[in-house]
Length: 142
Image (tube, rainbow, N blue to C red; front, side, top):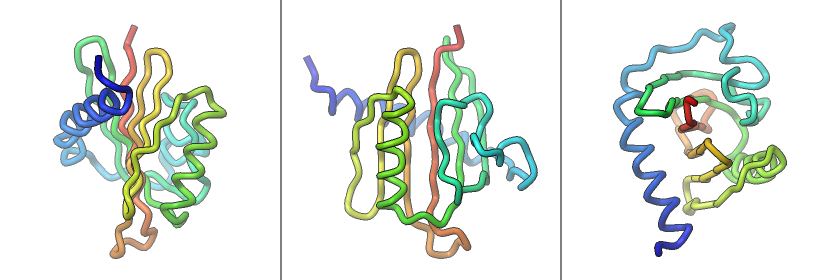
């Protein structure tokens, strides 16, 4: 039997591969759209969003019995603090969280029954809000 970390890495890799094409096809989201509300994306009310982040792109893709969404945000919270935020807030929201972060980028894998979330946190020095947060969410459509 494979370990939890190995399983998490495999699932995360599959999510990233499936969404790599989705992110290229997304349109920019206007600042005043429904994606920039306090909860981020209304379909994912159980995923917190730090106050300094605003939506920049979103895509959704049905796949078999699942709905897969990729949501991208930019913010000013440093990577370390964003990782800490997600570890704390996702656990409080009932998610099981595994930290798979490296030294320069953050990656968290969160799961709860019927729903999975990969959280990528990286730095983009060229952006006015240099912390890039991408949420890869997969949930059962049943």
